[in-house]
Length: 300
Image (cartoon, rainbow, N blue to C red; front, side):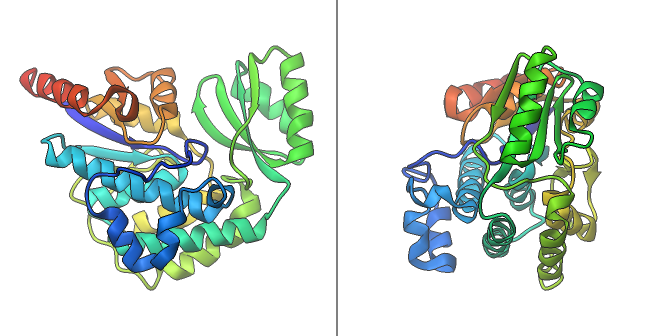
């Protein structure tokens, strides 16, 4: 039985999230980014996509490596949206310094394309066909298929608000505007994704040491060029988290540990039909993660 590390996307960030990080990742980030690294997790900085994404990368790599130092290592890694980048670093496919530069560019490209007035809204309690009927002709797009009845849409704020109102009228349990300022995971970001792909052509990726499970396709990728394509283009591709969870189940992963920050993916993973145990490291702590990993190992 195997361990899955999951890495969250935007919306989980919070001010001060890089304070008291383990390891040397923040110091490494300072060498690449300069003084910017010291203010990335301020409330002011986190209003910007670039800072949010860099924070999620740095925190994800730092906490996953801390687990490794404590004897808890992943067999499979998977990230939602920007979470794919720390996943790729931890898997050994992408150098951390390269990831810092690429994520900084990624955030800039996304924010420059849609500086304001756009984002994501999560709709709970309706099925995909129901949500598809609502978005048809609305100017919004299906962005995330997180679970059977947890679907995220992307688009302009007013268009999403109109769809959310209709969703609630048709029985949705909740329609929540997420803390994301760009319309991710749809064709609106196709051009920025292509520009990021051009930057990836200047970076060398490696065959991962661990199974890299794409949150966009729900498939394990081993070839460096396919991982590069997955990372560059995932901003414009639908997130298929439910399919990723099913794939991890099929590979006999039975402990999913969500790397900080937050616990959103832990809930989504459970909703997506996870067959094992899943915890948020931020909420459960390192000792619980070590205990569960040892118990899993003893079961074979």
